[in-house]
Length: 178
Image (spheres, rainbow, N blue to C red):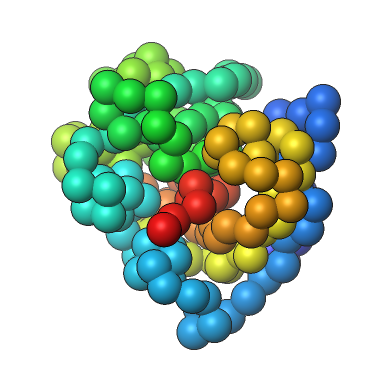
């Protein structure tokens, strides 16, 4: 996988009126600064890592979504539960034919973070980390993550295999951590 090709493939699904990034650079996991390295360089669900780091559950806010047959894509924010405090921006492309109808309905409903749905339904899953990205925020990402334009944060590209099938492609970008 070429990280820039995958980044483009995911972000083009939801064009922004302003630039999402000023720059996105693939960096080695070993070069990722803490606490981002712990947050991103693993094969777990980001939902779980965000909840652990922030010490609370997270809610999902779906900004936009598209359903085309068995392919579902959405642009989301994860927020500290019960607040407007954003902890993550993400874009997900999901091949729904790899999950049960019950899982499909919950994903499309957009009320529960994806990782939590897969965990709750005990979907056999493996997460393959594709790339760590150092991201300089453009105006759109800065607005989504409540950070300054030109500010730097980190994210990752990953694939979730459900029942041994490559079901989900993800872009997950952490809000700046202190």
